[in-house]
Amino acid sequence: MRHDRRNLCLFLLLSVVTGIALTACANNGENERPKPTEAFYADKLTLTLVEQAAGPKREAALRKQIARFEDENPDIHVELINIRDTDGEIRELLRQHKSIDVFSIRESELQSYKQEGLAADLSEETAAWDEAANLNSTAKRFMQTDDGAVYYVPNRFHQPLLFYRKDWFDAKALQVPKTWEELYFVGKQMTSVGDRSYGLAGTGGVEAVESLIAIVRDYNGDAVDAKRPLLLQNGATIFSTPEAWEAVKLYREIFISLSPTASKQWTAKDALHFFAEGNAAMLIYDTDAIEYVQEGLPKDGWATAPLPTGPDGISHYKLDVSGWAISSSSGHRAEAWKLVQFLSSDEANAAIAEETGVLSVYQAKRVELGLYTPYILMNNNPQRFREVSLYGDGSGMDRFWEAAAEAGWEYIVRRMGGMPFLQLLDREAASVAY
Image (cartoon, rainbow, N blue to C red; front, side, top):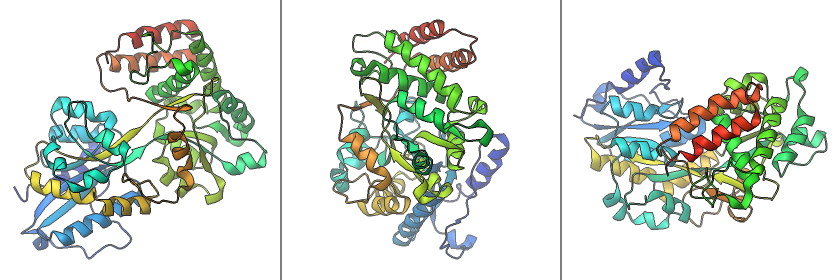
């Protein structure tokens, strides 16, 4: 049992052949300690921790805290594996491989993990954990599910912001857009196809549908049901109104006028890289993008701003949370919780937050907000910026995404009219169970 994790790195690296891209399991941190020999681990219990899409700064900061944990727990070795690619891969590994102990999970993915019994209920552990009381109110809200169970301990937030090229805006004496309509007109002035510069780094597929929904929701303003984000408070869908028609028309203009044609095939990460490489004036992405953009663009050449609003001055956003979970199949539950408790401590979380430029999940932390100022502004103005629930995995949701993504492209290239497109979205959204 102590040594069955030794082959996990090999298993995961071989999985590249089948489409699972992983980083090497070696420590590539700047202050790498001497590589231990196999004999060094002979009498140690090995815990496997799987992180998802951590950038270089986060991975290095995480390895530093793991080294501290190992120093304090000399009988435990932690093997960190950073999956670089898409959501869902950790879940697939948990289904196929039984030697993962601790893993990163997002609130937006939690329902699937619960349904498949992949994540352990940590209610008992967190109830006896003193530092849980010091988490900020948002972290506490997400940590406990409606049924009272706890499946992860939050470690960071993911909130969308508007990223923009400050140097481009300054050069043209343009103001940062506050509404979707302003974003379109400003983006048009920033787009020069011949110079390979575009107003917005867009996406295709399901992520393009997310952009469409954001605009439609904002155009419906005060009528949106925050708990059922595809519906209005009267029970109709957000696609059933005259405002939705105006939003859909604007969405098409934004997509075809501000983004390159190739973006129809892009994922959100592709759009992020396009912006970070200096090819677009604006990007809408969650706060994870900050680390990547810092690596690609000049420090004074870009900034962040609150999300654009609809005509009534209302914007809706989804706040997601990542946290540490324990595999329900872990054979070392007590040791795994010890690791989660250590990484989730005020000290470790604050250290990782400081090194990666994110906000701590603990309350009363004095931080240099900088690029996170719009995050705070949005949270402090709930009348203008309104949080809506995550979609979850309700019946009909997968069908909605599939139908909307396929029809969305048909609408963009004018193979489907705007009203038939809206009617399809209305029909599919109405069939989603919450």
